Image (cartoon, rainbow, N blue to C red; front, side):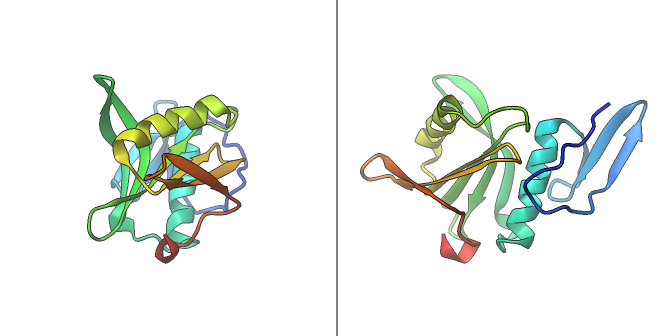
Length: 152
């Protein structure tokens, strides 16, 4: 059984249920119950933080979007778009026990080589890393915090 880890994100009143010994969390964006894994716990908290704290429009958040990288099918955890359909932010979520390391950042950067989002965010719910991309120069600058949606 999954025991939720307290995260470095505001608490939210999630709809948690259990069936046949499996714990589920209701995903408000996809309108379905998902198995509550440590990574899903982080993802759902971060999504709610985007919406409630940073004023990201629900309709511009895509969860688990597919991409093809080196002929392999992959999934990005969260993509945020603007109203013109441009990708603004790629967010990769990890379970709280997974450390945010250089290799985790490199994974997200590889995904972003396809997406070309202006921001990369990494989170394990305890630690958050924000990088603003300079796509023309192929560089990034780390930021102390993530801007509100209108500041992207």
